Amino acid sequence: MTQIRNSNQYRKRVGQEFHHHPLHLKNRLLRSATMEYMADLEGQVTDDLLKLYYDLARGGVGLIITGCAAVEEKGRAWAQQLGIWDDRCIEGLRRLAAVIRTYGDGCRSAVQLAHQGSSKTGYSYGAAEQGYSLETVTAGDIQKTIRRFGEAAARVKAAGFDAVAVHGAHGYLLSEFLSPATNPRRDRWGSSLRNRMRLSLEVYRAIRRRVGEDFPILWKLNTADYLENGAGPEEYAAVAGELARAGVNLIEMSGGLQDQIRLRARLKKEAGPREAYFYSAVAPFRRAVGTTPLAITGGIRSLTAMEDLLEAGVDLIGLCRPLLCEPSLPRRLLSSPHPRRARCTSCNQCLLRIARQPVKCVAFDPFQKIVQQL
Ligand SMILES: Cc1cc2nc3c(=O)[nH]c(=O)nc-3n(C[C@H](O)[C@H](O)[C@H](O)COP(=O)(O)O)c2cc1C
Image 1 (cartoon, helix red, strand yellow):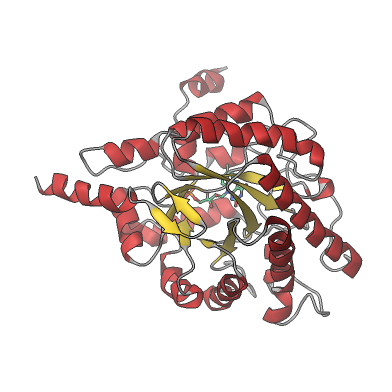
Image 2 (image 1 turned 90 degrees about the vertical axis):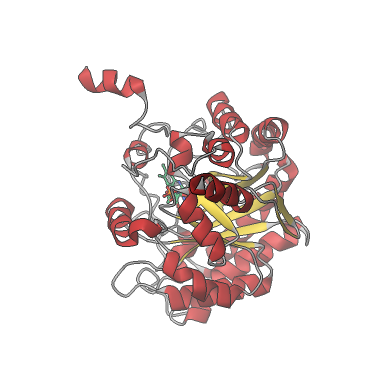
């Protein structure tokens, strides 16, 4: 009886609508950006991508953020990554937005924009060396990349998505500029925190200019790099505060800049029953961003942990691997008569796989057993 009462409470919170203009969501569950490795070799949308997002949209999540799309062709991190560097990408993206709108029962959608930056660092497996170097990139090329983010955001809006998301975490370009461990510059783009965050703020302004005041801009940010000489929660909370004051509509808290597989195994152990890898950053981030919506992603698997996070001041719960495993997890969690948890065991086989193949949950795919026996 107690269990059932508790689960109704959970349903009320996680299943509650979220309204903070201009973000309006049917529940508190967010599909955090997940590289699909399913675009064609020119970065265009394929039927496999449409199917992935059809399943997710029907699964009940409130907001879907796509895997990161490259704002420049030479800023790609993965061979079969979504591209958004050209107006020719809009038509495929229009179909992707349409599949979510048509089958998502009010589910909202966003494309995540990214530039890989230097492929020597970051969240990248098997990326071709593109020769990008933070040390030698010219001020002119930095300005060009800023413009590319703005142009890409305009394409996201033109394709019919509800929001644009920016990958400011995990060692991609913006995160490399933010971290003292990876930004060697001594000019106005490096050294002090103000200089290191200049690129993020300029990218934000370029996007805002192109999408207008009422189009939501979402930002994924590290709470810590977990690197010697890297930045920690204090600096990143300050960055979150600046972005919020500039007008970003949602900050999604994440973390880590290199070697994510080992790092996440460690963070999982440290988090214990709290589950959320970045729980300790909630309070400083909330203080820094004021009333700007906050999401948290990383390790969250049970309704109990989600409830705790909402109680602690977070607005949205981000899920990545659990939705690869079960795209309809939100529907199951929100309608279950018992407190439940995701099936995902965080084994990271999905992450290892996207070095070369389309993403999927390997652990729960019955065909995988056959593959392994061959
Ligand atoms: C296969 C895979 C692909 C990912 N691709 C992206 C991405 O494109 N952009 C991004 O911001 N994070 C990406 N991530 C990180 C996730 O969004 C998320 O932050 C991380 O997996 C922790 O959340 P989880 O415990 O719910 O999986 C990816 C993670 C995985 C496992």
